[in-house]
Image 1: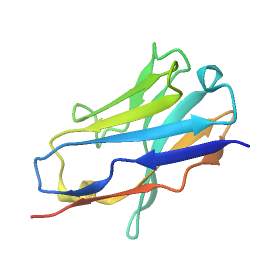
Image 2: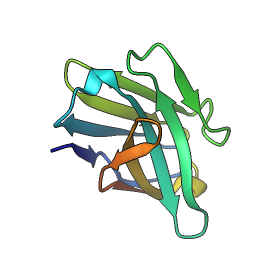
Image 3: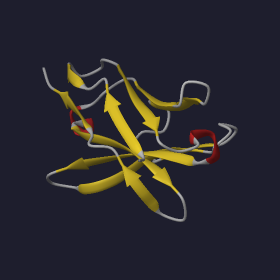
Length: 116
């Protein structure tokens, strides 16, 4: 059974940092591209970042370019998202998702709240 379990969310002040993790199981993690997607009540779903299966290519939404860094450890079956210089508009539920022609599996998410 494919499972994606996010962790690392929390309450952070503007300008702060967080590191999100996504533990994958039930499939050959190193064979799949992965992404982070976030959801806010007002904006709906927003793709944040993606990474190739070998981590040689990474992609970012304009809204997070230069502030967030996606990475993966295929030996640990884990996807990461480093969030720096956080803004109030980064407040959202963050999901990791497996990509195979579309986002076919999602985790349950981890909540990131940016507030002073």
